[in-house]
Every structure is written in C-alpha cells, then in structure tokens.
Length: 316
Image 1 (cartoon, rainbow, N blue to C red):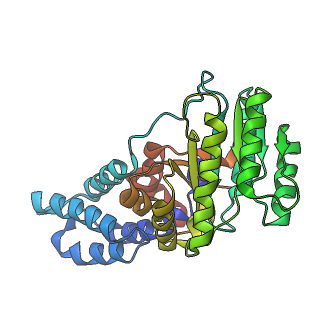
Image 2: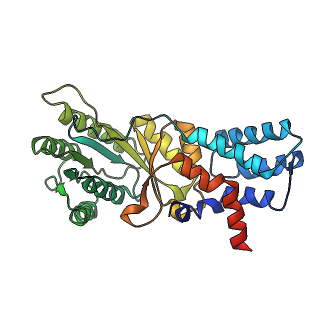
Image 3: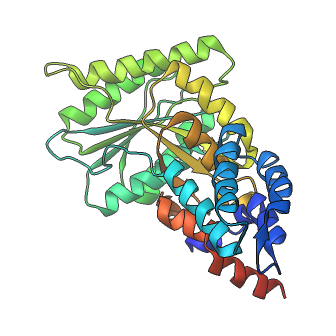
C-alpha cells in the first residue's frame, strides 16, 4: 500500500531520472548536464537539487563511469540523510496528560480530515480522546469534525456560536484536563500565510493552549503543533511552510494528497530547508491511509533500483 500510494510521486523527477538511466549499463560524465536539468526543474527546491547533484557528481568523479545502481544508491543515501531529521519521539506519555496537539495550515489542505484520522489512531490504541473544534470561521468545519468524532467514537468540544477561537481552545483543553482525557486534538481555522492578522491570531491560540496546559502546574507548551501541507502544490508548499515558521514553532509536518501528485519531491525540499521532521503522510482516502512517515521506506520506494526495474517491466 505504501508503494502504491507513492506511484504518482515516482512519476515526477524520479521517473525522469529513471528514463535517463534506462538501457544504459553505465552512467558517464556526459549525463551530468541532463541530470542537473532534471533536478533543478523538479519540485525539490534549489538547495536540495544542489545537494543531490553534488552526490551524483562525486560518484561520477570517483569512477569515470558508474553503474546506474550506484548512482541510485548515492541519491537514495543523500535523500535519506535529508529526511532522517532527529526528532523527539511521537510516543504518547501517560505521565503528562492530556497529550495536546494543534493542527495548523492554510485552507483546503486537509487539516480536519487528518485530525479525524489521528483521533482514530488514538482511539484504536485505547486512549480517551477529545476533538476540539477550534475552526470557528468555517461553519462546515465543526460539522465535519463532528462526523469524524461519531465515526471513530470519540468526544468533541464546541465553543459557543461566534466564540473567539483562542477561548474555544482554552476551554477545550481545560475540559480535557478536568475530565481525564488522554489526548486532546485541536482543529484551527485555515490561515492565509500572507495575512498578518490571521497569523497573529494563530500565535494567540498557541498562547491560549499553553495557558490551559500550565494552569495550576508547571509551565507547558502544546506537546505538538503539526503544519499540514498539500503535496499537490509542489514548491508553493515550501513557501507556505517558511511563512508559518516565522510565526509559530511547529514540531512536525503532515504531507497530504501524496497519492494524487507527481510533485511529491517537495517532501525533500521542505525538510531540507526547515530541518523539521515529517510525521505523517496521506496516501489515500481511508483512515489507514494516514501513515506514520518512515524515511527508509519512502526512500526505498522512490530510489531503490529494483523498484525502477519493476516499473519498467510493468510499462513493457
């Protein structure tokens, strides 16, 4: 399923590289320019393209000609070193309750759906879970979250009509503490990352969450803040992430709609630029299609020579 979900991602710059190498027993120096063009026109960003190109160039400089498998191996190794960002464990710690997560991002990236799928994971693990409907701007958001709450069997907290989203978060997290919830997952309204007042409000929501968690005990921040990005927009996702980072320290990334795009190379660019780990990827509509991100598995699917030979066989 992981491999199937990344089929379209492989059709981007990776397929173009595969076509360059196809039928060649050796990759020689004269291919450098073509490899460079593929990398610099991919959705991975200039910095990442330079890193990957440098690794390929080093390999070709060491051996006047190189086997395609060796070139794939150095690309895979470099990609893995980019994606394998050191991160705090995602393990839920029952000693610090409730585990509190804020989900942020622009409109239409799949925040509410991702939150519902995350709730399903926690419920399946036997954790008492509360969803907080912090998106008070979009009328359908609360209804959508309520559908997820019913579907996965967890509770939901709504604010009063027209309530300030920061107060909804504060009250929801306080309810989570008082009623002994293990996990509190907070939805937020979509932001235009170019609108300063909306981004300022996001900071206010973060402060409200911290106040609720810290009340009558040691100061605490939300355990995690995840920025959700739509993989189908390619390098624009990187621009969004950079703008959000100026406003809020998020601890992880969620890349949605990877199954529907050839622009999945943006995964590399975003992590390389921000040094923030990808926590989950969305590779389909089903609950189980929200997958914990596994850098090794991701790089194996995209860069392992055997997989490209399999793809060629299927095309033939």
